[in-house]
Amino acid sequence: MQRRDLMRMAGGIALAGTTGGMAHAQAPTRWDISIPWGPSEFHTINAQRFATEVRTATNNAVQMTVHSGGSLGVRASESVRAVGDGVVPMAEFAAFQNVGDLPLLGIESIPFLIANYDELAIMHSLVRAAWERELERRNQLVLYIVPWPTQNFYFKRPIATAADLRGIRMRTYDRVTAEMVTRLGMVAQQLTNPDIVPALASGRIDAVMTSGSTAVAQRYWEFLKHTYTTNHLWASNLMVVNLEAWRRLPAATRTQIQDIGKRLEPEFWNVSKGEHTTRMAELRQNGMTVEEPTPALVDAMRQATATMTDDFVRANPAAAPIIQEFRRRVGRG
Image (cartoon, rainbow, N blue to C red; front, side, top):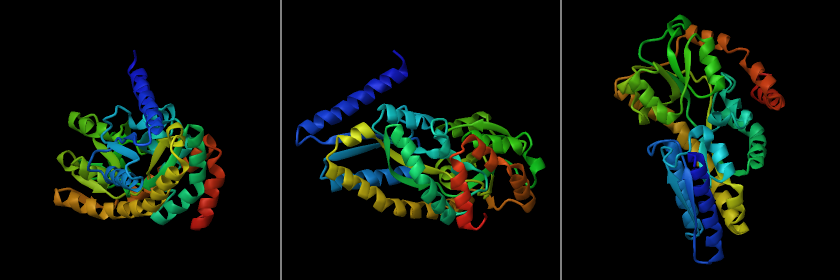
């Protein structure tokens, strides 16, 4: 029997257990949450708080257990399928890592489209409904969405111009970021979070793009020395639940859980906003330099990626009106 079949059976047993639990008034509903991030990442801590508040609000009727570090065997890029198929009842995943199943999730990854948190909130107000519709078609419901902090480049040596990037093996997230670094003369190496440190240790990669949260959690100072606050794209995580499991809950309980997600989401955004400054300070304390990229490097990055918005729209026509309205609202129409 294949590993995925075993996982599917385990998920089916978990969902069946939920049904059986509802048949007895005293038996709680127990859901496992698959999370690829390590236990110290703020997204994991957010998820644990969400689970605790749900348990308290439902008087232990719904008990969610957070499994960090991909310990349930679900890879980050398989999360949409895993929840939709019932392999796990819940998961949190990064939008960019699941573009293979839902390409529109990659809209945040378009280089230099979104400048800051305020603009990201505008983008979410425009694209969220489409994300939710598409995920519902894939048998899952979104409970909350929270962004990672500003994204950065991390290198072994100083980088001042595009010429300094040539040949560097850079960790990327998805097809869009792989295209970006390729255009900059680097060699794209697509990796999920748990794979980064082994790749650094083995020499498979020379550089990484990610947030300061991950850089600190994975102790990048042991491998890399220079951080550049490039702010080249945005990335958000979605907490989702399998719709079949969800619909087995009483309507009042579903409302309770959704209300908790809506209440906590702005608080989780504030946690994200504070992460960048905090984690950059920790990188400095551990011997890494942290600085803005040179104007020459920024210009090179913008020029190399200038056509990527149009490329994304051609591949995802549904993104065209969303991006057009986004640009109008932020004054770049």
